[in-house]
Image (cartoon, rainbow over all chains, first blue to last red; front, side, top):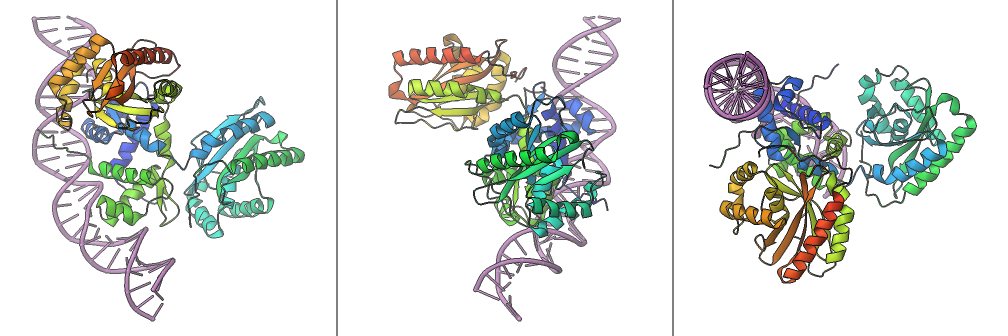
Length: 262
Length: 262
DNA sequence: ATCAGCGGTTCCGTATAGTGGAACGGATAG
DNA sequence: CTATCCGTTCCACTATACGGAACCGCTGAT
């Protein structure tokens, strides 16, 4: 059941192109390179680019020049709101990173995925960098992601797990049943613990970040190598995380967890 | 010669939708509203949204839920580079706004337009807010925009003026010939002066901001009501602007003016 | 000075991909 | 229980975008 995508092709192509351009923001991209890398004909690429320029998502430095990202794209992207916690949480991440020496993350949910918005590394010499800023993981995979999953109402948990069944196969130590178990435990504990399910040697802890109304809007997590995660240290980290999460609760961020059934 | 656009429709539609969603970043948008506001059928809108979600430009809070902007869009928009001067210049804008009491702008060129990246208002009670953040003006229209035009090589100046001939008609006190004259004067003066051509009562002054290599990457401008713009005050403001522009010159911003002929 | 190579742009006949009216299903309210 | 309202699915039609080929203008080598 590979879900044949019936989609608007031009959009997917356009986005592919935008990604390419975004990958070279300063140098810009030439038409033929774009055409080649996307496998589209020059004519098609050209027409696509004309449209992208017209809508402001791209711009070129003069007739025949290289293409760059357009300001309209930047503008839309900055449209205030939803992903601001990342910014606001940075000081907290830095404090936690300094305190623990480990790597700290903040993630939010988007649909049935978790997205890492920001990351700060501590000074412990072995860094755990399996999760990059912007990375997307199926809900439940990893500590922060699991925390976000466990925070959803039952109906959505099931729906999310079902929707992700396919993607889950990429992770050997995860399965729908395991996720359900993990959600149980996470809810009971009040924090999420990942004992090496993503990567053997790496453990992580996550706590929820709520807004003023008590809705979970993000997860704050710390990852380090398994050896460092002693019982004692775990509870220390949980306390620290919870403390910072509580602080974050009342920063004036207008973020609303998106509503309903997944 | 109104240049009938032969374009990729779905992209334009998609962008229109994204704009709508961006206009309500927190509340989200419902499918039917999007369909109605864009004038597209529900089916079409639905298909479009599916694609946007798949590529990460939008996301919905569960089957049938409202639509929000997706993180992928934000991510692309943040792709480091090009529009950072806006950020970096903010302290300078604030200083200038405080010093002069007037409204201060920073703009960059994109293709044959100028775009206002940031604005700060001073405390003089009559504010001049004809230019908003993100607004786009044909090159040459307005002080900052004129400065950016005058900074281009002759070939590009002509090309830009030609390309904008149509849009220019919306501005009663501008024309291709006038623009050419203004460019001359701007180059001679070393700064741009707009004596009420956009809006009668409003005057503005702009100076170029260069990068380390001397390429003009932005324009810094101050606008105020005509009465305040005395000879003396003009030269005071020019000095102030030039001072701040010089400071900006060596901030570590990796912005390159986009190359060649317009 | 001439030519070859390359990148961007335009053209045009074709088939494919997107369209939207209509019908369906599920939820919510009256 | 019925009336709406919203999102989703279906399908026949045709407008749309596709891409090969030809064209143009530039640059650099012979």
